[in-house]
Every structure is written in C-alpha cells, then in structure tokens.
Amino acid sequence: MTGIYVHVPFCLRKCPYCSFYSKPFDADTASKYVDAVCRNIVVYSGKGINADTLYFGGGTPSLLNAEQINRIIGEARKVFSLDNAEITLEANPCSVNEEKLRGYHKAGVNRISFGIQSTDDNRLSFLGRLHDFKTAVKAVETANTIGFENISADIMLGAAGETCDSLKKTIDTLCDLPVKHISAYMLKIEEGTAFNNDKIKPLTADDDLMSELYLTAVERLDMHGFKQYEISNFCKDGYESRHNNKYWIGEDYLGFGPAAHSFFGGVRYCCPPDTDAFINAPAQPREVTEQSVNKGEEYILLGLRLCKGISLDTVKSYFGQPAAERLYSLAQEFSKHGLVNLKDDNISLTTQGFLLSNGIISQFIDIVE
Image (cartoon, rainbow, N blue to C red):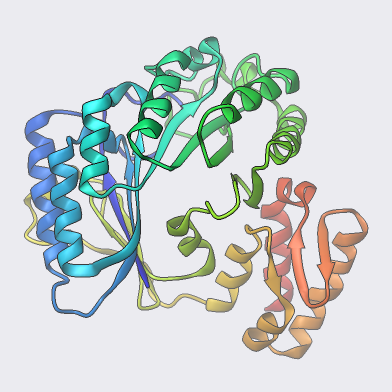
C-alpha cells in the first residue's frame, strides 16, 4: 500500500531551529494552496493506486481549517481509497481549539501529533514556541476528550538549560497525559536557521551531554511503557506510526505540496520548495532526486534506523554471500563495543549504537560494495 504525504507550508512564525520549508500564513494563499493540492491528487484518478496512510506535515497543518482538511481527505478517499487508513495531522498546541479539533476528527483525522517540545516554559521560550505547557496540556486533553485515541507528542532534547534531571521531569509529566506515541529529537543546529550563530550554539547541549540526554530519554520512556521502535520514536504497544514506517521499510509514498518528497516506482523525486509555483502550476513541478534507487543500500540505511534491524539473509539476497559475510564480520566487531546486537541472522543497533548510527551505517554500506 502507498502512503500519502501532504506538506502544508505555512507557519505563524518560523521556529529558530527549524530548517523545513515554510512561509508566513495568510488565508488567501492557504485557500489557493488547498485548491492546488486537490487538483494534484485528482491527477492520480484511475491509476489503481491504493493508500492506507495520509500524513499532513509542515509547516503547521493545523493552520488549515477543518473544512479545508476535510476537502483534501475527501479527494484522497476518492482517488486512493484510504480504506482503514491512518490519517495523521501535525498540530501546534496554540493553533487548535475544541471546535477545530472536533472538525478534524469529523473529517477523518484519527491520529494527531502535537509539537509540544518541552514541559518547561523557559525552554519553550528559548525554542521560539508560541505556546506554554499549560496550552499544550489543554490541547492534548481536549483532543482525547473529543475521541482522539492515537495522540503523539514531540519533545526536543538539548535546549538551553536541559539536564538529565529536567528531562526526566519532562518525560514523567508528558507520560501522565493521554499520549500513545512520543518522538524525541536531538536539537541540531542547521545551516540557514536563526539558531546558527555563536550566541546560541554554546547554550545548547554539547555532544557528551546530548548523548546522556538521549540515553536518559530511552530509559525513562521505557520505564513508562513507551517502547523504542526507531532511533527517535517510542510508543505504547500497537501505536507505531504506520505512515513513517513506510519510509523506513522502503514502501512507496506520494508527496503533495511545495517541498514534499515522493518515492514511487523506484524513483525519488520532490516538488520544489516554492508555494507560488505550486499554486500556479497545472500539475506540481517534479524534480527527480534519484532515478534508480539502490534497494540493497536503502535496506541497510533505513532498516538500521529501526530497533528490529536487518536480516543477513536479505543482505545476502541483495549483495551476495561474500558481502554478507563481510558485513557480519564488521557487525561482530561493533558488537564487542556494545554498538550492535547480533541474534541469529538479525543485526540491529543498540541504544549506544544509535548515537553513532551515521558512521556505523556508512561502514556497513561501504563493506558490501
């Protein structure tokens, strides 16, 4: 089954750490944007593509009203079926109220992901968030009361003043709320963001502290029943993100909207990050980013993000017996240092290994080629 991603490129204010494409919200542009999304979805009519996930990401999707979300979902149902689909909407706590949440729920949204980031108002202010924690609590509890059973929350590790003790408090407090999924991201200063300056960098966690914070988060979340299933993602039993799993196991997905990426038919492509161009084009522009995907490399690269890891037999099917043996020998070396788990023909990264995942995965890919 295919996944559908809709990038909503609007924000009330750009967060200083965010490198995702967005532009200031205005109602007229948003209306034209919704028209364009629906127009582009209709292009796929009659092509026999069925989808079982729809994900509204951003930007701030919750700046669209319920009628607009309902319209997009309606077009997607006509074209892609969406039978028994997981339909996720990212939301900022300050951009929703009871009426809006009821409208989303009625439209078919059955999973909502709140960008909470911290339970500490000082750190929320540092991160440039427009909400305080009281507002976040109200948003989560209102969503739960309305009928959203599947609620996710994002937290950010490593903001100014963060310690392992304060992070434990954040996690304890957050886990008291009716959430079933938590994404814990390590704050990274990206080029081109407002945080990329010599004043802010020293205020954020250095590599050693960030490692401690990450390990603390994994342990504390597990204590509350949130099992890790991917580098940054944790959930109660049965509440993994079905849509995001598509990225990690190499399934097809189609992206709509400026800066949205797609992987379909073995080709990776994206829509350029230009809202006006997206709105004005009869069909969204398409830039191919990878014409012929190496499925074996993808299997290793993405599979090792998951706690379940990769199968040596599958590696052998892609690269042959000698390459699989070389990879296993390297995995044994990493295992001696507590970075890799080996069980039968399965290879996965440990929590410590996740902290060094980029380097480890690169070495695995190099050794099979």
